[in-house]
Length: 450
Ligand code: GUN
Ligand code: FE
Image (cartoon, rainbow, N blue to C red):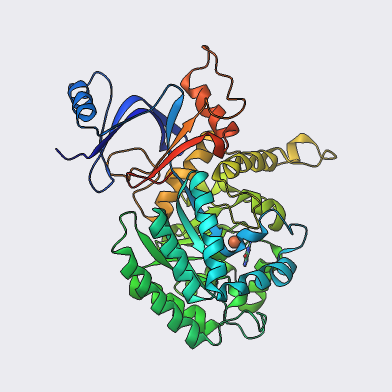
């Protein structure tokens, strides 16, 4: 017998970017390591005996009517230290926002007690929003960055955490900067080793991430050294890439090439690399992403405020790039991947249809840009798992049992549910209408964390 717990209920999972599978009244058999060993459908020979045995042995978790399993969400881009300023200061351009609001806030994480208070609240909030895996930027401070990894480990969340590198002597403020490239690299290497050690004791995994903030904040020496560390330890890499006009043009001026090419020259585009935003990728940049296995973290809420345009995500998907979703807290005002699923769909419709009423409908928008709800769901779950090269984001054998239970009878008032609504309709209603109050419980690697 290779299962530990059986979860019985109806689940929704992506099976490809544009198709979902509805697993009706299924038995999700989860092994002692928190992995889905098999999924049984009603009518299969083993179904009834296994169900009776699990009930007898007190190893059955059974959903109630109108409760559904969804895979846990993957947040591919989030700045943990920016949580205190969520929902504020969104009227400034990116570089002003960084200098006047964000860097002074991030500098406070030298104080590990401040960090503990914020990070604890944030991880609880993300879990309550159904986020089971998160790829975090912390700050330049290795102690409080490590604390974030510890808090994820403790709370059962799969956290991938980066100590941020920003060592450029002119481009960063004195009060918030790595002292030198040598120190930034030494701190990063120590951080990688510490988090890898911690990860060995954590069932759901915690992982260190090589994290140059973005090219403008890093010296050539630091960027090259980080590329070497990524290869030496084969760890994940994250940064911001071609987010908007200001940053894109800054890099073009410094290197005479686009972000993607410059990052690649430093060895930072790799199979386990995730580049936030990547709004302004040209054909060559996209080819580089594809060749190296670099993924895009699409952050549609943030992009509406800071990117100066809409990322053509459908085009990236059609070309076979790996794409997932990120909240980009606090440039994005919500901790919810659900809100970003909705915004991904909405932004893509505006890109396709255009927005300028003085133009004719034929040349108002950009053809074939829309993302369907099912595609956005894929990005939020399976796409995120693929981006990270981890077996997460699907309710399928061989994947970690990372699941959220959405309860349509929760909330005040609860969802209107009528007999004519089939499960496909209910799925759409959940994705457009659910809030944290409908997320009844959350499991990560088979363990109940909410
Ligand atoms: N580019 C560099 N740092 C940041 C950040 O904190 N947020 C966003 N949106 N873009 C960045
Ligand atoms: Fe960001």
